[in-house]
Length: 487
Image (cartoon, rainbow, N blue to C red; front, side, top):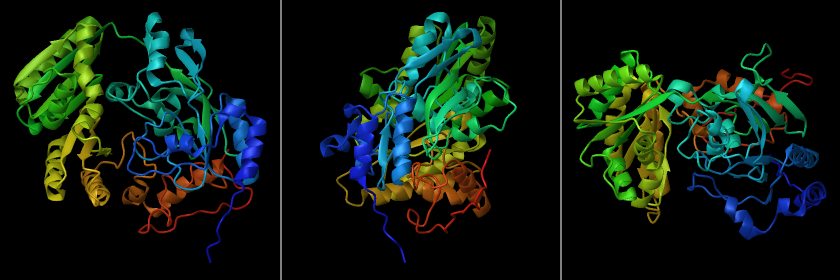
């Protein structure tokens, strides 16, 4: 027999108001509706109550109140996530970190900086650019997404090919655990002898606690940067250029591909023709380092692109011209939104060698399901971001879109890839996780989660498949014996 769980929200609100400034507690329905979804707008659930803490002490007080009342919570940053990770799809308190926007410490001698989770990604580089440093992870939403959300999803971006994703650039975390305890994961150094709980927390999508101070690795700005733009008559030729460049031993800072639908959307969006409108695909290649190294690498990359069938090549060496070439790629999702305001972004990974075959299969599936798909992706590491375009007026749209999205993920897995590269699992793909992992794998993940959160109140129901959220998934809930934990 299933027993309903009732939470005393009035008592929780009363305790929260005692612990926080009055403006930090949000109760009005019209205000709560502002948080009814994240970047995945297809699913919407307004939270029953929300808070906006401003420092670690306030976050700890909030989670202690939740712990005392047995009420779950969901952490939310800027709300730009694309997998429903910040969605309150069951009764839970929403903890919004967007007012935690302070740069806490700048330590250029050790090439690091510590920020609160609400600091916007692009602000980090802005804070240190004048001293010749920058922060490498750069999601396309970097002007609006927050560092706390980047940590939760282990976000990537254009430069992840050479420099890695968020997990490669976080040196330490101050974390509030689900019971309100404040702890430190990682010591702010590049190497540490203890168990890497910092690494376990990054990418955990808010299921282990809330990071309230994040120490980031800074890099020296490169001496020279060149950006190449190559256009191709076929997507297969663009994929061959990517393959040949990596096979030759070149390591660009980033390699990005946009298909014809995206090219035209971007050119229309900005009102110019930076990308050839008749190209089946354009390939952007960024090379950085010392001037002589970049010059030699750019010449070799140009040759390999021509051998792969590039119709035209353009090289940008001036920082302003480089920014223009990247502007379209960074704004691709927004540009596609001008074609249709409703689209669904999928996120899968495939081996680079399979890109042409996988993209051909996505095109076949697009025609089979009757839904257009625009492709823009991190070609260097095979991280695909197909955008499924649909009309919200179609009553069957959600079912059709999710069926096509699932079929695309199955193609990625069959090619030896993954169901997510950087957007996370969240609510959107939790029912597909057991396509990739067996029961023992999922049980191990659950054990780790329970070590941090024995009552499973942190972002409940996300990431791991459960009977409630996935009718086809077997129950995989592990109960830890008393006294067993992870240290």
